[in-house]
Each structure stands twice: as structure tokens, then as C-alpha cells.
Image (tube, rainbow, N blue to C red):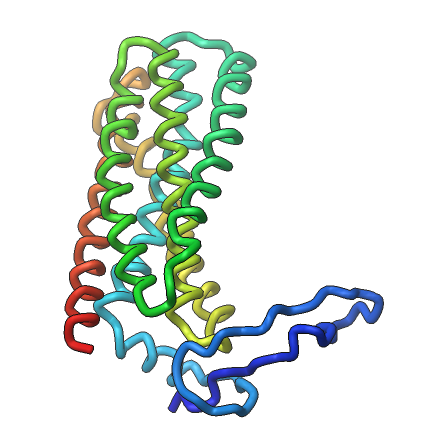
Length: 257
């Protein structure tokens, strides 16, 4: 079924596109499975989902993680500034000056650090390495995610927010990198589209749930911190459980090879 896999291109040949003046070049692709020298051809949807089914113990948890990690990010960004304003009476201008730089600096650092962690990982062991990292990072993120919404000082809250941002952006970088490593070349675009769609659909529910809990469960706008801690802590715990399941699958898979 997946016999047309390589799709290699001469690394010195310009990529042909709409802009004939573009001199961008595509790097040579590594063969992941199969041995056919023929160029890759698009797979049907049936073949795509059949491929996912061969390793559903890995792909299903990854799909879930796309949603839970996104939910943590969306929920934090949507409601943490409001938490500072309502709880500590910080002005909107001051919140922007605190939260904006913290997210930019620590978000960038998290993505770069994640890249260094997996840069030397080969394709065969990438799934085990990355799922193992993700379960640890998700567990570590639980503390700042919950504590930042419960501490008595807004400076401490911002520091914990920055730490949580660093850990979340590590996970955001690791999951797509893992997906593009474990699927054939011609499936990468479709795989990312499907998994991002699933992730965004779930992630968008987090800000809604935080607002709903604040307004209808606690019925107190000052209780938004409890809602943040409950929702973000819950989705990160779910991420950790999903990655533990995925990691165990990869260990069994390698042992059986």
C-alpha cells in the first residue's frame, strides 16, 4: 500500500513553483519506510487512515495531545491577564508590559530548547525519545500551571506564567516534530492538517470552559484563578497520561522489532 515513499529530489534542483524567480531549494528527503526509487504519489484518504491504524497506540495519544496542549496554551493566554487584573487590580497597560515580554522570551526559549533536545535523535528512536520527554514536561508543567493562578503575589504569578510558557512551548514544538518524523514524506502535509484541525477544535474549548466555570459554577468573577487552575491543570494531567500511554507503546514496539 505504501510502496511509493521516497519521493527524493536532487538537493541542487530548484523547487518549481508559481514564482519562477524564487531560488529556494528543497533539501534531500530521507527515506523512512519502503525502498521504492519511484517518486512519491499522494495517498488516498483510505490509505492515510489505514497507515494511522497500523500504529494507533501512538497516533491516537498524539492526536489527543494536540488538543490538550493547545487547550493549555489558549486557556492561559485568554485568561491569565484577566486573572491579574481582577485579583491584583493590575492595570491593563501593566499587564501587557508584564505578560507580553514574558511570553515572547520564554516562548521562544522553549521552542529552541526543545529543538536541541531532539536534534540528534534518529528516526527509529524518535517516537520513544519524544513521547518520553513529553510525559516528563507535562508533569513538570502541572505545578506552575496550577500555582500561578493561586499565589498571593502577582510577581510570583508572572514568574510562574513564564516558566509554564517555557514548558508549554517545548511541547508545542515537540509534537509536530515527532509527527513529521514518523510519517512518510508524502503524508506530512495531510497529517499536520488533520492533527492540527483536531487540536484546534479541542483547544478552543478551554477558554470557554474557564469562563463558564467562573460565571456559572463559582459565580464569582474573582474566582477566575480557580477556574484556570482546574482547567489547565486538568488538560496537562491528561497530556501526561496520553504520553505515558504513547511511550509504553513505543517501548513495546521497539522490543518487538
